[in-house]
Picture 1 (tube, rainbow, N blue to C red):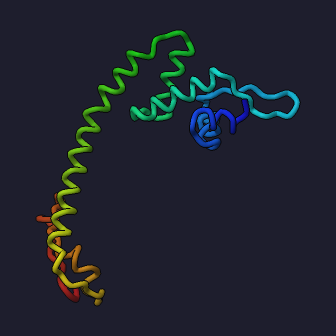
Picture 2 (picture 1 turned 180 degrees about the horizontal axis):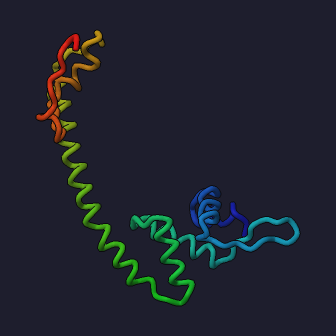
Picture 3 (picture 1 turned 60 degrees about the vertical axis):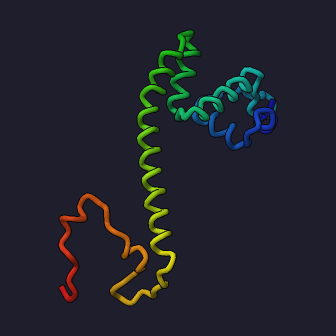
Amino acid sequence: MKVSELARNAGVTAETVRHYTREGLLQPSRDPENGYQLYDSDSLNRLRFIQRARTLGFSVREIGEILDHADHGDSPCPLVRDLLAQRLPEIQARIIELQALAERMEQALTTWQDMPDGTPDGHSLCRLIESFPDSSPHASTKAPHKEGV
């Protein structure tokens, strides 16, 4: 099957198929008459595997490693477990960061609800953001900005 047919059968775009082919995850044969890339049913199964792996958060590089293990007759399952075990705490930490960001955003919207809009005047860019407390680690060590300095 050609790129477009494989893409349609897998529910992805043709560009997705081309991308995975460029990355070496799919290895089509070439039609000797016209040079078109041809994919077989194994390519469809492989593409579906790639899609499942992507939904679990594996990178293209990691999927390549997993497929390489399988292509050489080695079980990639230990690698898969190790990668997920390593990634899960990172994702959980990121979720906590995003929840804190959402709380700051909600706080800002609540605080700004009754504040008037301001026009930049050379001293102020956006009073809404400038009125929000600076929570960066260097906020307390920053010297205050002085006019004319």
